[in-house]
Image (cartoon, rainbow over the protein chains, first blue to last red):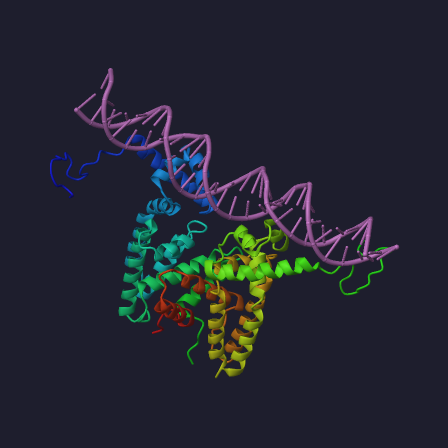
Length: 203
Length: 203
DNA sequence: TTGATTAACGGAGAGCCTCTCCGTATTTTG
DNA sequence: CAAAATACGGAGAGGCTCTCCGTTAATCAA
């Protein structure tokens, strides 16, 4: 059915559709820009209507571009994905061993997860929904985590029987815990220690 | 002004106030009972009005007894605190060593935290608020965790430089992560391993 | 008992939020 | 410069939290 009969598409790449209207593209960009500001200083719970008003568009426009809050969050995050990829590369090239690299990567991921207050929650539920817009965004991070993990496992720096996905989830959980109002620096340190070394002492 | 002049309180224990009205006590009990059912099968996010209607009382009555959702959650949890205390005692008396005891206790706490879907979230924020009704409820659990931890540390089964509070928080984080829709048994197992032993292998 | 007093009830409704629908405005195309 | 297609905007439906206050029921004093 895709290209059955009749039509003669001018652009093979964009198949049949026209280019996106200029005002639409502008609005979309503006919304993402404003959303990032709003998320940064009010957390992910800002009201959608407030974002729309603040961006100078109607609610309808906001929801046409981003049907769900997650879609908007995903769009905001995607703006920063290149930074994270770049960081992965730097870590890859600058670490003494694969164990240290994994450690540094998890630290970077944790910071990424804590970019906006309340981000861990949707990241977690996205993990369970096959079709969430956030799913794609974080899949890349999970995959990279898996790569760092495997390298560390191969060199004997990380335990076997551990998947990238679960290490990602554990990191997410720690990031979530760090969002606790009273969590100070020492809490973060202890949580990191726990994730790295556990509470147990082998006798 | 508390007991300045005149009044002759009949009951020294309840100072000046009258006993709580019978209908009030009944309603309160009924609400808690219904709330537990609602939380059990709909998670903590059921609407307050729905609980009120389902309990056969007006919204005003619900909010008079439980000004916030957290207050209601705390009341529901308090009904089960004795069970947890009992479990602590059993573990205390039946474990081969203090390390195993700590492990079993954390397992019990994790189950307690996952009693209702969405419970970890308010438990976490309660940790940061001095005057949350949930705060009191979980303080007991934190304290007990601290005791199990100290015993394990004394016997060399648990690392030093770890507080009961942070171990509790880490357990809470793991419980939160387990709430992920796609989290199966193996996920839980790996998360437990991480908390106990970390991902690192000491070479 | 009974009337007075006080505690508690209930639900209407204010205010906020999400999300949809459709008449109107703008852009693109021929 | 129409005509067609696309996107806009905001009113408003529906749901939620929480308050306020007129009404009702329990308790107390005589």
